[in-house]
View (cartoon, rainbow, N blue to C red):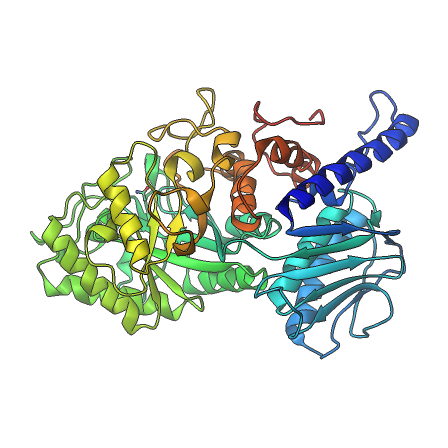
Length: 528
Ligand code: ACM
């Protein structure tokens, strides 16, 4: 099946490039605008589970409508409206959304009985009369719509090729993390990232909301956390924080694009901003100054005083109340200023607080060295040089039933430099070129970790050196497309097939104003 899909994909890609090359030969004028990139099944990223090309495609025109609402379902209607909003700009068509099924055009159909499509899968059938998107869930319809976008040229109305795409993800969790603590980013900037990620079927946004350099989310019961502790960032800038309304608005925006927000309150280390805000949280009763450097591992909550647990309970209660999603991330990494026995006891109590508020714990994989609660999810961020014992602890936890999210630092850390010439970024885990970020198999990565224990993959972007939207996009793109492909498409990876397909995304990223890194290991097909 996989071989067939690949072969078919390659043939289709060649066919679409060939036919477009003819058109280009006729139309292209030296120095004139570059023609829009050809679209076709073979360019889809992430690659779908199966494609069957057949017959003529569906031509979009001024009369095309988007049909939803066989059941009058408001959520399907919203999926249709978002898709219309995404298509109107590039196509220049009005694309009204109507509640009148069955009349041709782009039709969204929720079908609870649709087989083999799972919670997020879909079928897209394209022919002269209609393009029909079918899924068991609105999330599946949303993903189908993102596939449809990629079947159209980056500009102009175009034709959706004839055939059927049947698709479902390999992993349930396909995430990106953004650190808004080291440098502050606004919710509007993060919404832009959500849009960029959701189009590649990424479905989780982990927000690193607190760290030594800043506390970014308002907590009513401890207001100085944000009001004082939010007023700093790396390098001495003004920092900032999100109000609860801003946070709720972002969570809603992401949910409408089927991206689940996973908030992280990092504890018991990485807490200088909290300690600076409240003297009573410090063992010696003295608040340290705010911190704007980039060291790690120097701060710890005072695990021996009950006030610390009031703080943990209050903060987690308020964050849980802001979170419709399943998960609360409690950090637990680099707690070198917390003695090991105190760490384990602290993490026990923090995990109990998460459970009290009805959420599932996620923690960095150091929790495997303490006592992960039943069902707790571990996020592995080791790398090739991580010690065997540490890796074995994570594999053992996976065998014992803990789901594992894989974020290997030397593969998926988007803050690692691509190479020596990359201006932002760090290199403690080595350079991570685009090919290296993609070319590994999450299902067979960590020795002894059962493939069934892999919940998915996540690409974190730490922001010690990333201060602007431009830096963010340069570090994330195009590597985060590899994350999307690894998370959604069936493995194992195949660079010879993936590299050229990734290259076809260049005009799409350019049309969206994404300032991606023009990496030398990618066979780009177009000039910039
Ligand atoms: C981490 O990079 N400290 C999770």
